[in-house]
Length: 380
Image (cartoon, rainbow, N blue to C red):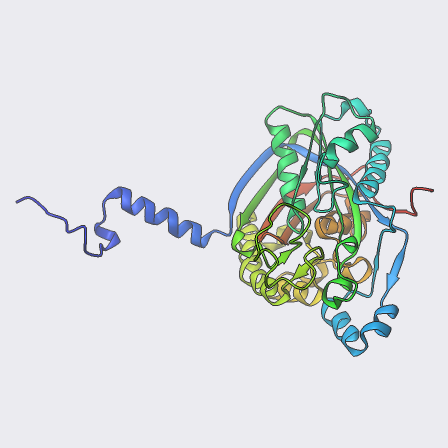
């Protein structure tokens, strides 16, 4: 007797053809997995330097401007002070100083650097790529690859993946990964939700070939959140609704705090759980470095993920949210002494604008350099 299948009727998956079962399995896996898992070997982090502007801004001026609301924002975000650039200073300036210090500390010859990648959303110009300009300013060889990556809060995990992938491909042996932003230049000074939250910083991370180096990544994206954290003006979309629902100033940073909070709570615990489970448990990690988005949120995430609080450093109170620079800035402040003295296993978690997210599970051997420097300006 020939079996007939009614393809118009719902099909129980147990009786489905193998191709349908396979397709369903893939879809279910995508729903359960918080991103794409990638393992890389053959490179390591050699050193990290962060550079922050010397200008420190505390909350006193905001108390005068915003009254009781300023105190509420301080309590929620945890930001008590931050460092801001002056009018003549850019992300590239901060990253350049960090890179110069790092190269000197490592003793790397400039022409030994095979690639320079800049993760930023505040470049010097719309074109050319700021990484190209920094290749020239740093005096790197003309053989060096150079380009920008337009990512913010998740940018450091993505940047490490890019640097290690470039080395794994055989294209490079030494990579300079620069990550930073000067978000203070984008905020509306009358928007208390953003002007009180963000700080400025630039960082440089040296990644080099090493047979024993390895890292595991989980990377993901949900582009339906594109309008939740956005600067709508200044580029090339001119439709009438381009600025609809994103504040009164299209050239300033707009942030839908509630939507971002919900995205974070829905995504990051899964990301942490998958990263920790893949590693064999939270106890194998020496520190968990979260993007410094909001102190209340960070404590909630650590608690929800059942992470020991003494292994979750927080420095947003001193530096604010520095976008793509937050994770390396944690490395050069709160755990710098440990990183330069002993082997350390790190879990890194970046998440936010895009929406995008990424995690890194990496063992870091004692670094030759992990420090924070302060930049007073071009006259320095």
